[in-house]
Length: 166
Length: 82
Image (cartoon, one colour):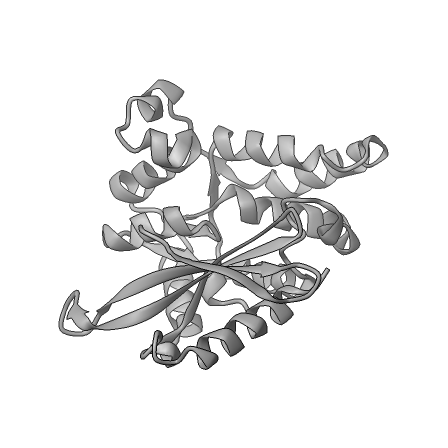
């Protein structure tokens, strides 16, 4: 099966139960929604293109229940603030609109810190692994170490890079 | 700065040029990209025909290629372990 078909199947399967968009892609979604021209001006999104942003938007149209975590939101907030200060007010408004309907799942940081994978993956990704393993959520990421861990453990993941047209 | 497409094309040419090192190059899959300090780091995976993870899924090997962000030249390649 082609990666595109597999991704669409997964997104439809998890549409109601929920999918988590990892920080790197949520940042792309935020910056692109704010102003696509800014994708290339932010260090953490300049590796993406407008086509990648469009692809992500189209994929997420298939997800009715988008899940996030405070760790993801904080990462995205911090990284988006690398844009000039004059952008922050409008960017904040865009972030609010983008995330209003998200369902946020909280987990104490200490649980991730105690995870044996914390040195490798960090707090955010340790929590994502638990969300996939314990609560059966789909993870959408462009982060290979995380995607690989999930795939190897037979958990549900879409590596966004498999879908990019390059 | 060259685009990701140009960087990936450079890697494809590199892989084709050293085809004997990449016997399963037609199975290449983009896994991760990073752009930092004017270098694209592109992780590709290749099916490993010598080992099977299951009856239908072949194990994959991972390599990361460093590409000069101005010239597009592949300047390094290394194995990447999961």
